[in-house]
Image (tube, rainbow, N blue to C red; front, top):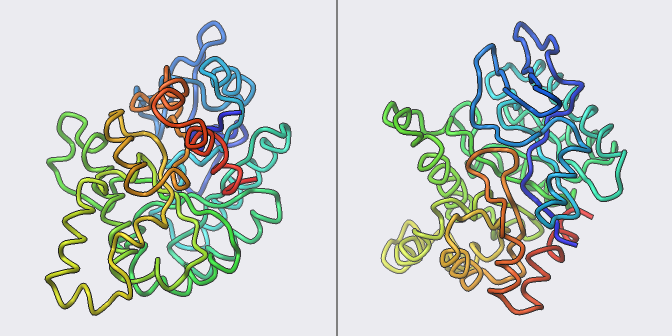
Length: 324
C-alpha cells in the first residue's frame, strides 16, 4: 500500500479566516474542479491539484496508485513572520483543523505546524498536537534568520528526540533572500533545494545528528541539493581541522541518519540517493498539489528500479516506521 509522505493539505476550516490582521487563503471552483487559489489576495498558479477537500485529494492519489497519505501544512500557512504568541495561536488553529480532518480516515495522518520563533513554545504546541493525534511536525530550514542547526536550538532537538516523533523539513526560500531568485522560478527550482541542503549540512556539521541519535528528520525533495555536495563535505572533514574536530564521525555517517523523499525529478539521482543512504532512509513523496510535484509513474518506476524488498521499504515500510 504505497504511502505519500509529502503531500500538502489546507484544512477547509482555514479558508478565509481572520488570523491577526491578515486574510487567509481562498479557493475558487469551476464545475466542482479546483480553479484558482488566492493567497493574501494574489492568485497562485502553481497549484495543479486539489488540496483542501480530503476525499478529492484521496481520489487523486488513488488514481496514481497511492493508498495512504501523510498530510503536511502548506508552507505558506506557517507563521514565520509573527511574534511567538500569535504564531502559536495560528499553529494551534491549524493543528486542530488538521487533526479534525485526518480523524475521518484510517489511511491518512497529519503533521503539525509549530512556532519556531520560540523553540520552547514550539515544543509545547507540538505536544498538544501529538495529543490530538498528529504524527509529527513540519518546519522550515530557518525562521527569522536562525537556521535549524544553530546551537541555540540544541534543547529543541533534545526534546524532539525524547518525543520520538518525526520532523519534516520543507524549504520556504526565506533563508535565501536574494533578488536573483525572483527570476525564472529560481526561488523554487534552485533556492528551495539549496536551502534544504544548507539546513541539513548545518545539522550534521554542528553535531546534532550525532548528539541526538533518536532524531527522525525527513528532508523534502530528496534532500534538495544535498546529494550533490555530500562528497565535498566529506572531503572537508579530511582536510579541515574546524570540521573534523567538531565531529565523532565523518559527515557521511550523519547523512545516513536523515530520511529523504523521492522527489528528485531524475531517476538516476534517486538511484544514487538510495545507494548513498540506503533504502531504509527513503520514502515516497509527490509534493501534491504543486506544479513541481512528481505524480504519474513514480510507483511503477520504483518497483521496476529497485529490488522487491527495497521498493516495499521506499513505498510503504519506512513510512509506517515514521508515522504510524
